[in-house]
Length: 157
Image (cartoon, one colour):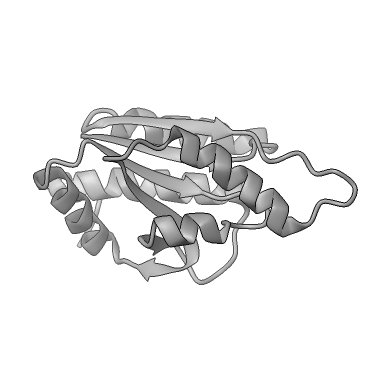
């Protein structure tokens, strides 16, 4: 199985990057993992947020394969404890999922096109964080999930 984190928009705070890279390396001890950055839709002066979201959705949909499992990281998604998230990851592994993609949306969130096509959503917190922080928190939790699955002492019960 391969896990990918897709992020719409660039990281404009370089101090987050080393931490994200560190967790990315740690995750790769357990599974094939990569982070992909997709540019945000270009906003013209009269662009409406809905049009920008639809443009981003169209570009994302072009990259998603039919057998990919896609989970949108969204404030309206399901919340997991760290242990429950590790069990969810384990279920995808045993079900022979080839590519599991988690997506962090752009500045305006996701288009209905994505919500309709991919109903699986996950919430990292009911609080709002910058997209750069979400990337870090997700990577840390994914690493934690694998340490739980491998009985590594990183996660203290």
